[in-house]
Image (cartoon, rainbow, N blue to C red):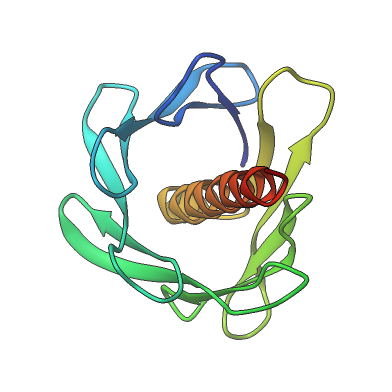
Length: 168
């Protein structure tokens, strides 16, 4: 199943629409104004399906995943100097690839590909293509991709702020 998602143009809190190949909106992801990053994922009937919460006050960034309020898993950013790396505690899956260019894959413990994610170029906002091989995994894949996007944005903002402070 191929899904596409794009960031809404004037979204301060991180707002996305996730749609199918026929451009039918299947999910929306809405950021909440809070002390930490929180993103709720709603189905096309506006039912809350999942939530991503950034864990507050940790050495390395962590994002918790919830299905209808129940804890489902965790994504943790690893300490690295030159490239982004993440650990995933969800269904014994792993995530690897080129995170800065947002081209990566999710695999199960046997190395079978669960999903392949790539960024589409030449758009005003962030656009991604998610190829999910089992429809039952769509929500979990969405939560992983959104958490990685949140962390890459947060890292970019921190780098820009650091560069601005150092140049003064």
